[in-house]
Length: 172
Image (cartoon, rainbow, N blue to C red; front, top):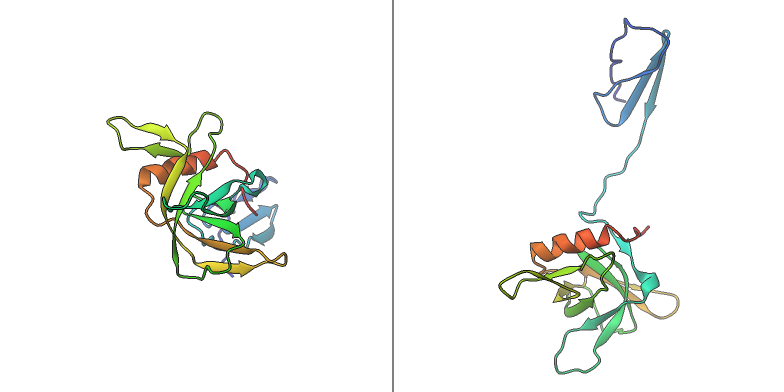
């Protein structure tokens, strides 16, 4: 076990002092008594925080101009890097790519995406791009949850989506 040194052992004035040399270990000393407290913090695997949008019932569409209603499913949660969608389409397998269209409402005056097609940047509510399915999970109610990264999102859209999501509740 790593033990961080107390900041100044000669100063035993009765107050608690904390060593700041190591972020995972708290070392306290009070009048000659020493306590070492360790915190176990697991490593965060995700690069982007997930935000729960299931309660909104937002649809996710397959982007196919030939189909009139190509709804893929309902958005469960989203991050600036990927999505999780609940669907009834049992033909979806891991490692497949799906062209999706996400449409998110404006929130607190913030649009989730940026339109870069014109001379000036303008806000927009939808994004079309590729999702690579990494995980397919069967649920008890017969639906599937598919999850994966959004592959070809521009950095400006990813940044705006991150700003937009910072106002939303976090997923567990």
